[in-house]
Length: 340
Image 1 (cartoon, rainbow, N blue to C red):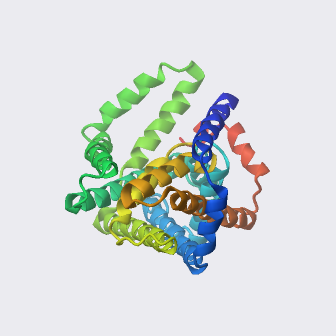
Image 2 (cartoon, one colour; image 1 turned 180 degrees about the horizontal axis):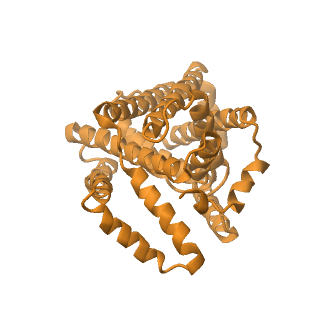
Image 3 (cartoon, one colour; image 1 turned 30 degrees about the horizontal axis):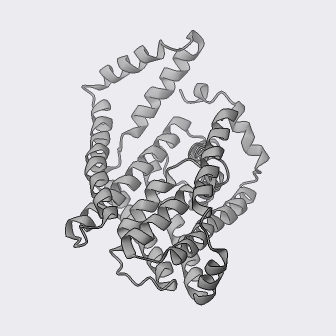
């Protein structure tokens, strides 16, 4: 990543952190922390393990059209390495690192493994939007500004996600794929001559790999694992909220999850600032939590979210015989030529 992008993301993160911390009452936060029972943060940490296990299993299903029998250990390790990199560095670099590293180990085309990450994120977005839409359809607290904003976002994004899946299906249809190929090769002419062929080759492999050639059982497995994954996350959030004396039902945690999901998409290192502002805003707006309690919850919540994947990611890095320094070699390779 170019240095100016890193500086931009770091500056954005610093600005968000400043907005969050400028009114923090640290003495009051310590008092709130002292009032919670240690069992709730511990349970929150423990429930993060099945979250990442379910994500690894789902990734394995998405990879089946290209390679069956990938060991769960590899899926687990590279998933955690990817999240660790995304949390430590700006720009969501882990989303590229984990499929590339898995492809190198398993001898697969990188365009295929990268495409599975795109589909994975689309399924994440679709699942959260469906859960949010179903909750909002039955919600009684329609006057809350946060819910009105979430309803507007859901009605906008849900059709767009479905449209993206439709276009992926259309682009790969035997009748339309020649048009897709012409479009890709036409756009590649905008590049310098030496990049045209490898870029168009990668793009075509990537478009083909986006096709969800999983069959009914495979699609059902991906849908079930997605629902289970996000259901476990909702339950873990609910537990931690109860630890802070925020007694709400399980389903009303869904809009809080949606707000956190959106804030996590901001490419700042470790979601610094963006997640903190969003979580505090959602807690106050959804559950009328006092600001001091909301800030105390957010700081602990953010720390726990980062601690597990970073610690497990470092262990996975060691298990795969890699190091932080060795990851830098990914930037210097001509990956495009290897994808054809």
